[in-house]
Length: 129
Image 1 (cartoon, rainbow, N blue to C red):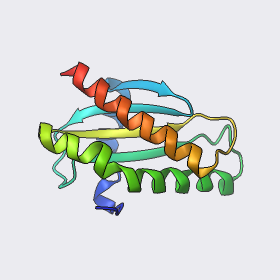
Image 2: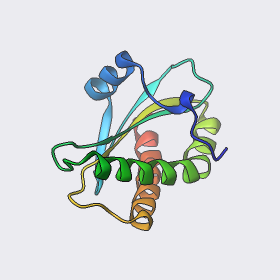
Image 3: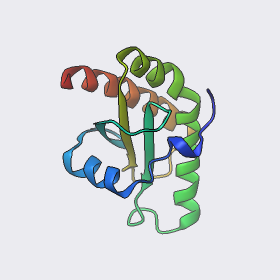
């Protein structure tokens, strides 16, 4: 359960376009979280894409560092905060985590904020139904 496999990554262009045009979103600094109900045929309940702005972080080294920290925090917390909830609901979603912060945050900060974002996502998901 503490893995981040290829099936969990959102790579489908049609799903990405649909997510950003029809999906719901909220901001919980330093993340903008966008999500959409989906009927994707993957075995996982969530497909996720992680974005870090090239405009704010010019150096690829910095963008990659932030993405690694976000992926690790997501990998460790997805099961207890998201997967169990979605399995109970028997639903699937596509998810975008955009890092909108202006500075490179330390891992504990990213992890704490990602947990809060996933909790808020569950609340937003309940309201949408």
